[in-house]
Amino acid sequence: MVIGIVENLRGSYDYANKALHSFSDWIILITISLLMLAGIALMVFGLMGFVVTSIETIVPGASAAIPESIPFAGLAGAFSLAALLVGAVLTLIFSILWTGFILRVYRGGELKLGAWGSMFLDGLLATIISLVYFIPYIVISVLLMFGPMDNAAFVLAAMVIRLVVLLITSMVLIMALIRFAKEQRVGAAFQIKELLNVIATIGWLRYLGNIIVIGLVLLVIYAILLVILVVGWVLLIVVAPLLAIWEAKFYANLYESAVAASTPAAVEE
Image (tube, rainbow, N blue to C red; front, side):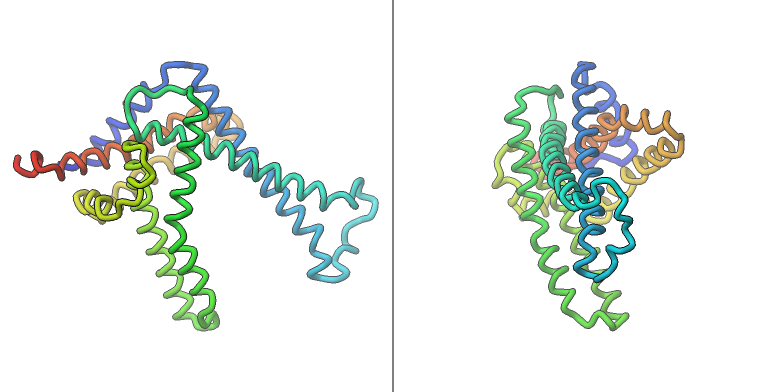
């Protein structure tokens, strides 16, 4: 029998609450998440700056609105590009490490940091797997852009199609990454028939309901902490690893219960 939502929420939270035995591991995870966010912030800042400094090529004369008295105005484009590149590198490196850690949660067993090369490689492979999975979505999105965009009905239909493809891709991808983490083979992530059987055992609508519930629970927590200025933001940074482990274990429990329910022994019972 597939695990219930309430039971899964409770069980995965208990796991997350006891998963990290080392205070230093917690600090390292917080540092990784902060560096990842810093990389994203640098990318956004660099992209905005690069667009502003490059707008002259799009709208001639627009640069006249930028006061010449601004220090280093002539180097703004270079600084923006540098910030964009540095941010991209930081985001890529630390998001890969974070993903590698999440795969360890998926894999199960005692959760601890270490073997950084292995964790980075796992995260890199998971990132590549994710990119491959999103190729159909990207292709469909690009093709839809060549349709009659001045037709409201087509635009609405295109939005629905993209949303459905994105949702299905994400649902299958979560199970694929968990399967990859457990079997430690890239090929396991592309065993589409087995993955669809797992989801069918859960039930597509029930699976979607699980995604919505855990998403809403985490969203409420994020919203509450973000509303509490400064103190809430600090708390959010501190509990970020806990929330990430909670969500990852929630999906891992769902996968494991579906696999167990679909085994011949479970079916006979």
